Image 1: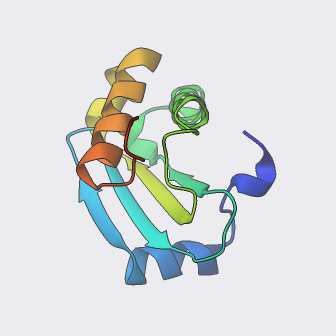
Image 2 (image 1 turned 30 degrees about the horizontal axis):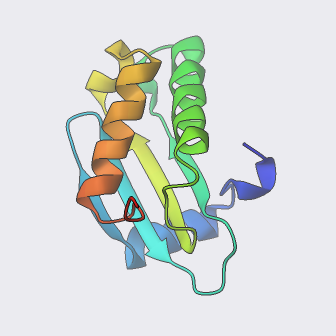
Length: 115
């Protein structure tokens, strides 16, 4: 995933957390905020130190980025997302992360309708 599609600035994080909506499951919390006229969604990731050491946290972030990249065609593009990993996420492999992320997106109606 290209870096221009990531959210890095604290002001943008705070805006999405405060003004956006959220949905969660056991592994992840998803905050989202609609941005009209945006051609591609952007994501910000937060994986706390309680999840594990730096290697484990970076692995989870790679898995989440890859899951969003593989689901790119199905996700509505005019949204900014923040994904916060919860404690159970540390035990997941990539396929479980992708399934959990797609579940959160589906439940929050952020996936395009399949044809």
